[in-house]
Length: 84
Image (cartoon, rainbow, N blue to C red; front, side, top):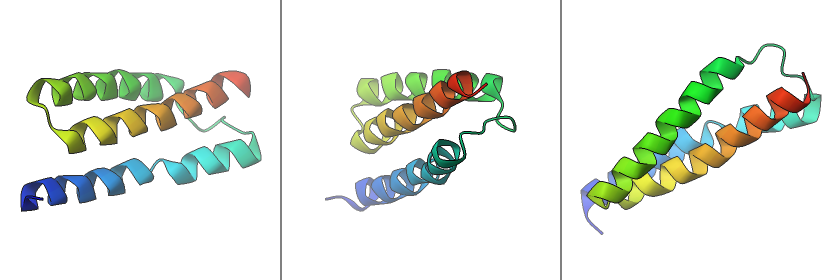
């Protein structure tokens, strides 16, 4: 594995996992008052675009990180709408 791929996978892992505490906290507390729906919708759109970009350039770290990030972001959006 090339060092650039390893670097990308490491960065992707860290930035993607940064969403997990928010998902867990939102799920446990069932509280989303302090979460901006607009911000997370914009983030989700950006993540989709990054995923498309990853497929175009055939970059595994970009694709994986953004697919997982989208799922986590979608969960937060779901909670925001559900626990309004």
